[in-house]
Length: 172
Image (cartoon, rainbow, N blue to C red; front, side, top):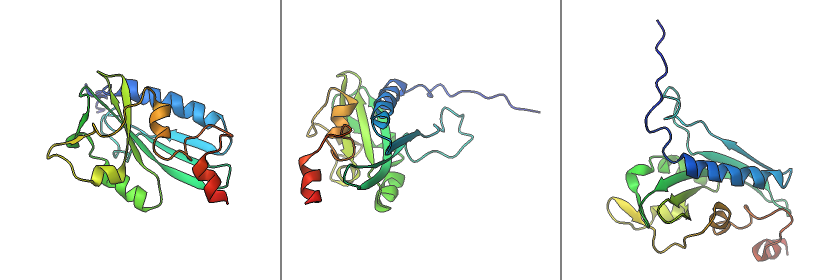
């Protein structure tokens, strides 16, 4: 007897934000042959028949100066203007572990009521916070995925051929 697949009613939550990030990463990766990303399988959308992925996306790249980077990007969507509930980020331990393995991991938060993005680093999430949520009001809100990601490690999500001050200093 086969059991029919039943899609979770929560499977579409955050899809708008994830699609925006996927569009950005597709464009980002198409600008250079030394960039790649993968969309990781969503356990909830798959009916929880597979182990949950560490994040929504993984990326790999090499900068113009030969530096190699990899990491994970988790995308969250919230209706709150500056808070993210801690229980909405069960992936944090796995993001932390990947970061300890040399990855650069981020959480992108889309505030749907503002139409704004914030990029969070793992050290930021491990810092002091309120009991049940992170207060993100001290972080800048950005109009696009590109602006938010460029605010964290600029050398990773730069435009192809764009040279940053930090990258030039490392090259010297």
